[in-house]
Length: 406
Image 1 (cartoon, rainbow, N blue to C red):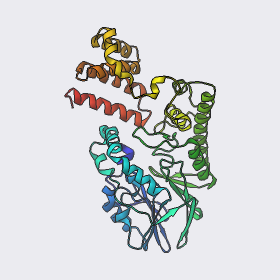
Image 2 (image 1 turned 30 degrees about the vertical axis):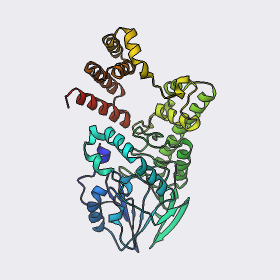
Image 3 (image 1 turned 135 degrees about the vertical axis):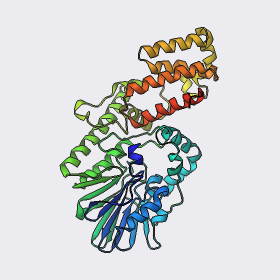
Image 4 (image 1 turned 90 degrees about the horizontal axis):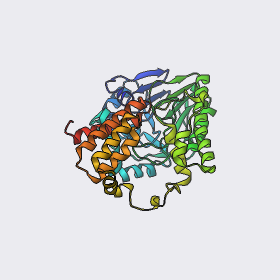
């Protein structure tokens, strides 16, 4: 919540280098002054576009030559139409139109998931920042594009291993500065989210590593990300990037080795952990077990060769009535779920609760037990992963609503 709403009260652009200014939005926007005009890197959200334009105009020198958009999430480009002047050229990756079309195509479904996930923390604010608006880049980057404005060189690189397939980074070689956008997610020195539970295409582990290696090869003194303060120092940046790379390669290699050794997906999700020398790579954004699953799915798809039932449209809950009958009714099943919760096995309890709720959708006792299991699981994770925490909170809120408590 702090990452997303940190800059909502910011009025003036913050100077973070001799010619660089920052506005903190859902994802940060930056202005780079040159001897012959200025360049924006990202444009913030549509809801903050008036503030962003006013604040940047107060520090801008000369004409607005370019707006460079580092990916097709609306917190990066939502304000671009308002920020652009008639002569401004907008720049995005060559994949931008297709990726944006994908988001717009699934928006009636995807936006519901997004709002549900974030509502416990941000409330109705998610209804505002998700607007995609209308944006059509003037220039599309295919691999690399070099731009020069006044005395400043900009090298723009495609980095499809980021949060979206159309991600870009921007290198200012004369200032030894790289703008990485959200290539590394919202939190620095964390695992990437190769699959986000809000719903998105799976991101390739090896493409992420290749994009990371491109950033490393630029040997920057300053790394400016999509969120938070800049990171300074070549050694500091390189050390962190090396560990992030090694962590992803470890998860990738262990997953592939486990698959080839005949281990099943859930076994690998349980067994694979980062070695001790990589334990300081955070799990706030990505999570080891989820990345194992993303890598598995990227390589082999959804059929695990575990059960014939995987191939068909009949879910396990279709026999929920049979399970309850054989178990002696929903009361007995919920009692067993309580036993699992008491024994610190809330996930096992949830399987039983799902059977009761499938057979008896109006059973409020099942909702009460479900809420208890969700609260127990929330305690167990201790807030390590943002998406996991938000999901559990959203389900607790949903349970409270069914019970008339919210």
